[in-house]
Amino acid sequence: MLKILISILLLGSFAFCDKINYTSYEKALEIAKKEDKIIMIELIKDNCSFCKKMEQEVLVEEKIVDGINSDFIPVLLNVDKDELPLGLEKGLTPTFAFVNKEGELFSVIPGAWKKEDFLDLLKYIKKKSKLKRELKE
Image (cartoon, rainbow, N blue to C red):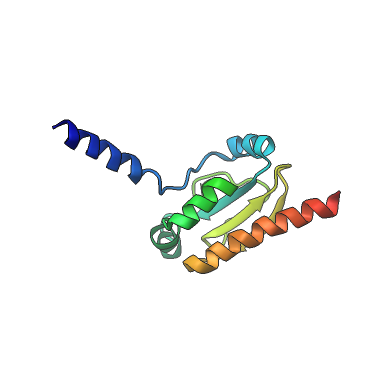
């Protein structure tokens, strides 16, 4: 019985490993400053079939989830329900907006992506962020 209980607990804990750790925009700003990370704002709406496709097919991929959770501070906002920061507007969803640790919006990329393309996009954003920092110095 104890082995069964331990197995259930372990399986339950693994189920939570492959999820993106979303936070609020305000909290993301605090973390970005402390950890020198990029904020990734994912803009969605309830009736968006492309948002659901991204959520079910791409944003569950282990490499993508791990990459987002380790390199970015993810924020999920519903354009029909949430206040949008930084002058972001309700438009095409999903849209991914990227913000530096100073709270400056530096890239807005609309659309649903395939797994490989989204991984490349995340790598590009990391590189773009580093280049912008180097250019400012």
